[in-house]
Image 1: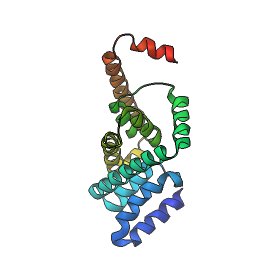
Image 2 (image 1 turned 120 degrees about the vertical axis):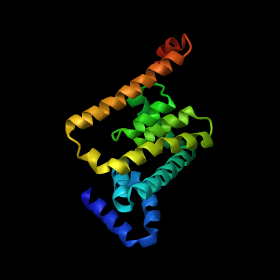
Image 3 (image 1 turned 90 degrees about the vertical axis):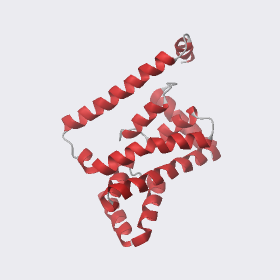
Length: 192
């Protein structure tokens, strides 16, 4: 993994003005290389600085979301596989857009699994892309700015950060349930 990161860093530095293009393309091939989003965003901050690294990461992650949307719609078997993973991980649990955006900030939650949730919540590609782009801004900013700091935080700081995110997630879940019409919870429980 470290060799892959060093190789990618060397390629981008030698590329000159094509470096940003290669970096954005790296976001597109990232799933094939099994690189986490966190690692690529940290590399963007290291190679290009905070502003440019964040911008390139937002563009790359947004394009990855669009490519994923097209792949899932072109290949129903891929969509069905992702839906199986979604059912296995969360059952028929519903989420709000805000919850998906909070989970996108957490490094251990699968990026494309959250994209499947967004696809289920939206009615068109345009609406999906709107929420997808909004959903990648926070992780791109956070990981680019605090990348190495997050990776090297003491366990108690990491645990506190995770607890705050889980609290926000639970708060949004509570709000979602309050907005749900009466009887909807019963129907949801019966469907499981």
